[in-house]
Length: 273
Image 1: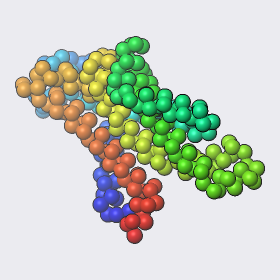
Image 2: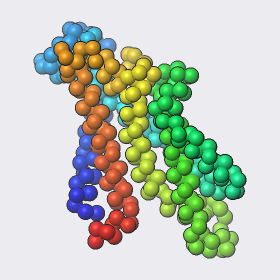
Image 3: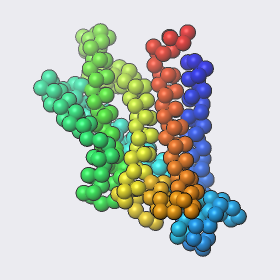
Image 4: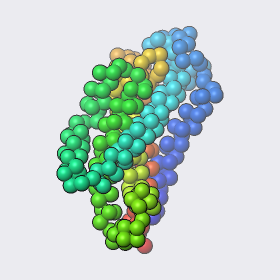
């Protein structure tokens, strides 16, 4: 891996680690209670309130830390749902008969035609706004993308000569999947899921901004942005803090995914030699 790419990976992991450490610390220490409104309305940064307070008098730094929990929880939850469902569906499509495979391909193309946020909005609007619903909705939208990628990768692996040799040797399909298919498609799927994690963070923030994400009193970076838009000129910190936090986390995830791709792609490794 080239020096430039290794720097990208190091920067990405550092940015993600900053958010992770802040979230972990928030579970054992918070400057103020999440519903404490004793700080005064729109107090400027300084003193007991590092980032100031919002329009309700709540400590912005506390809200930011709690929003980090929701952002990371959404990323991990949505990736888990999308990964499990997407890889399972992709494997089934890859091993299916021709007409079933064609039907699966058309279905996945239709699902992917819907933007992730729009599909998540439809699901959340029909089931009610909550963090669990948002994670499920984003994960389901992500699953179609992962399934299509997995299907293509499985088809490529099954066309290899060593798969034919394994079948001639009498090795069962479950053993072939575990020993040959999953190890070969795993790195590419993992990189794709890493990129999807960044999109999941943005999708949750967008849902919360629209009032379809995590309901109050739980803080969310998207809802913090929504609540701060009316006072952005008089109290810009309330909008800048969650906005910068979103940028740091998403850029960190994307750089980490890019570095992970370089580590797992043999063609890139050979080109660097």
